[in-house]
Length: 435
Image 1 (cartoon, rainbow, N blue to C red):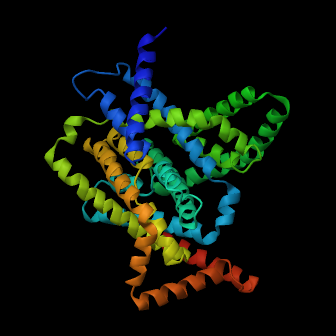
Image 2 (image 1 turned 90 degrees about the vertical axis):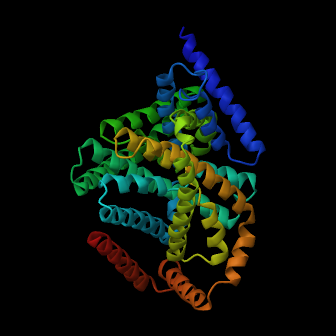
Image 3 (image 1 turned 45 degrees about the vertical axis):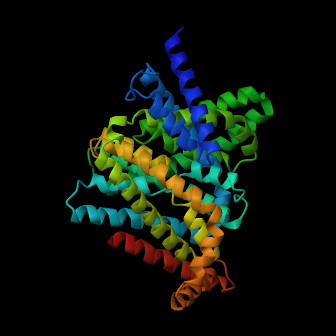
């Protein structure tokens, strides 16, 4: 028996539980506690190495990423995406594409490596669905309209981040092959895998539900989850893509609630290990660098302002009222899971400096603290901003909101609405092609 691995696993779970409880007691997210636990037990924290078999913990962290993305996919469903309306989907897509294009343009002006802006975009493209979910639940805001909007928005951002992560990873592995070719291959894989999974998975779940006991159903679903992750990896993409796709499909089936209950414990344990493993990569000697400590709050403020700008633009495009959009925008300022994932991949591929991982963790902690402070006060902040909103801008926003509502949801005749929607998407595709 490998007692060393069991000992390491015990240390990780106990330290993560203790630091998570302390952070929860202080009003912070337990995810921050898991990151701090990783720094404590990591190999770079003197004087004693609490974890000896680091590779085994990192292997478990890959499972943690798979279960985390599976749970994220379970939070969405094709039915929920359809209910959200086209406006919200277009807004999130426009924000993601605009962010990537702006950063690529900035990278070209600064003469950076073409991959560097893509990794920075990946670190900013999505907020932390795990932290946001906990903040909203703890504040009793999850069932309010701004809370539901923020939760749905961050899940759609996760979808955009997974697409970008898979494409960038394949682009790097293919030694910087033409990006359009990689994009075409990626979407071809998505369509093929999605169609096959949609045809097979619901039937598979119905068969095992009728004929097998619950523990056997759990084993087979877990095996299917790992199978899709392996297939995505062999196709040249991240295992997170296969896990997210399976979660997205299962979320639309009648078996969703039973599977969600069965996997909730596994998701909690392996997700915690994933965040701990991220913290283990942080060298505390880097954190005491005065220049890094100075840069961290500056970059956190920049990330908050960048997130607020892109999200508010998306909310405006989708036609949401200010009293709903402002609290939701404040909730979506925290960076999270994908900032760690992109930072780690960027460091491994020598695209980002070694300090990127420490910066990603530090920025996440600071933005989470900001979000935890402003979310309970979101309604008051929204009222304060609305009283100081320029009248001309308010009239323009109201006119745009009425236009979007009539275009996607309103009483406009169906023929005119369909023609308008087609023209709307045509213009979007033309802008994207030119960019």
